[in-house]
Every structure is written in structure tokens, then in C-alpha cells.
Amino acid sequence: MSMRYDQNRKRIICRWEEPIKVVMNKKEGFINRSRMITVKVNENGKLNSKDRRRHEKHPMFPNIHRFNKILNNMNYFPEHENGHRCAVCGLEQDVSPSYDVKRQSIIWLCRDHLTNSPKVDA
Image 1: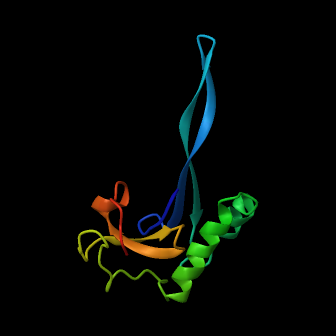
Image 2: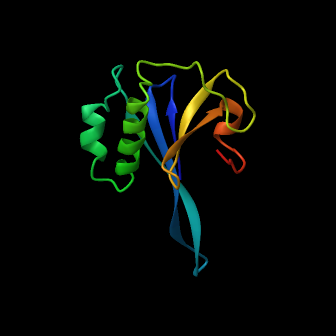
């Protein structure tokens, strides 16, 4: 699972993969299906009420809420980009917060490392 805040769209994007059973030529197998939830974040850092009602019973929503709460505790909203470096390459421009679910903390990644970041020791 990966989760990040998209500064351009002002949304928290949560992606994960689910194994789906598939039958082809009478043979069963599984493929990983990519799933996604996006929740809009208002200027003041609150989750959009319409998106919140739509997704609040989803099992991934507590992680989205926790990520938003951490960003609010850091006074990240209204949008604030300066002062953070990419945890992989050290770049300071176009760095976005991503949520590490295992450590329940934020990792800052640049555009190049958002989708395919190596293991990060941050």
C-alpha cells in the first residue's frame, strides 16, 4: 500500500493491490488488482465531508485519516513546500509527503521517487 498527498490536486491518494481470483480455460489463478481511494483536502487541512462520508467505512480510511492528522499537526496546511528534502536523493523541489504505514510516519519524496522508491531508511 502507498499513500501520498498530491499538492496539485489537493487530495490524499491511497493505492493498494488486492488478489483477485481469475478463471481462464478452466484453470484458476490469482492476479493483483490495483485499487485506489482519493480524498479531497480543504485549504484548512480538513478532509472533504462528502468524500469522508463516502469512504469512512472503508478499511483503508483510518490510515488516510491518520495521515491527514499528522500533516495537520505539522502545520502543513495551507500548502507549504519549503524545508523538506527527498528521503532518497535529497532534492528540495517538488517534494511531497508520503505516508509509511508500517512506521506510521511521513516520508518526503520527490516526483522521481514517488512511484518507484527504493527502500528508504528514513
